Structures are given as C-alpha cells and as structure tokens.
Image (cartoon, rainbow, N blue to C red; front, side, top):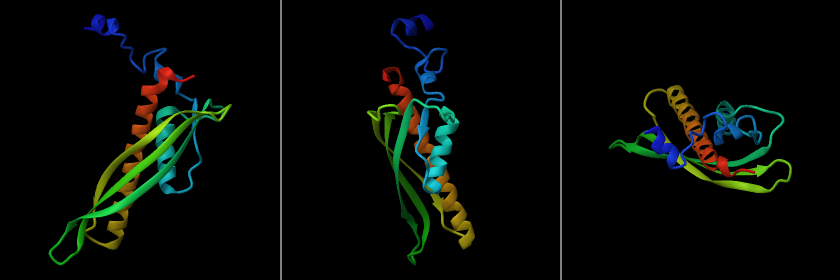
Amino acid sequence: MPLALAACGFTPAYAPGGAATRLTGAVRAADPSDKNGFDFVERIEERLGRTEVHRYDLAYSIATESVGVGITPDNRITRYNLKGAIDWTLSDAATGQRITGGRVQSFTAYAATGSTVAGLAAEEDAAFRLMRLLADQVVARLIAEAAKLP
C-alpha cells in the first residue's frame, strides 16, 4: 500500500518536508476586532503557530446569522442555528500580493430553553465552536494550497 501511494505522488502534508510544514510559523492572521475574530485567530494560531516574523498575511471577514429553527406552538423559539461564513485572503507579507483565498461556511446550533443566562452562555459557546470550525476549514484549504505557495 505505501508503495502504491508513493507511486501516485502522494506525500503526507505533515511529514518532514511536507507542504504543511511551510505554513508553520509563517502565517499571521489580521488582528481581531471582536470576540468572533479573537476565537478565529486563536484557533489559526493553535494550528499554524504564532509568530512576529511571518511570510504570509491572512486577512478575513466574518459574518454570522442566528436563525430560529425550533418553534413551539405558542411561537417561542427553543433552538437556533448559528450560521457563519468567512471570506479570507492569504497575501505575501513582503509585497502584499494576493496568493490565494476563498470562502468557508458552516453552522452550529444551541438551545434557547432555560434561563436568560443559560441561553446567553449557550449562544456564546455556539459562536466559539463555529469559529473553530471555520478556522479549521481555512487551515485545511491553506494546507491544500501549501505546495503551490511561493
């Protein structure tokens, strides 16, 4: 099996010298401006490392929307889907030239039953989970493009 994979040109992304190693410590996400941005950047840094000296700049724009999906007969919403999308661009830090970019989307859900405090805590946790999901998608796209990066 390993010989067959080698013959097709497959190289593990995280193997020594693999494409993903080119991203470690080389990407700096733009400074966050809100809680969602902070959670997104935190996850990007967990996955790719935090650095002051970097080769690539990661710009992003976050959009979220809360949609009621569980409605009782008396019109109370008991469950929400939190939808999110991030438009992102990876640029060369030295020249500012765009290298790659795209859009990632996902959603998570939370219950709105119980007290107001419980509902707010559930919403905050859902937003945290959503930003981690979206950051992981961005990193996956970066890894897929890593072999082509200058």
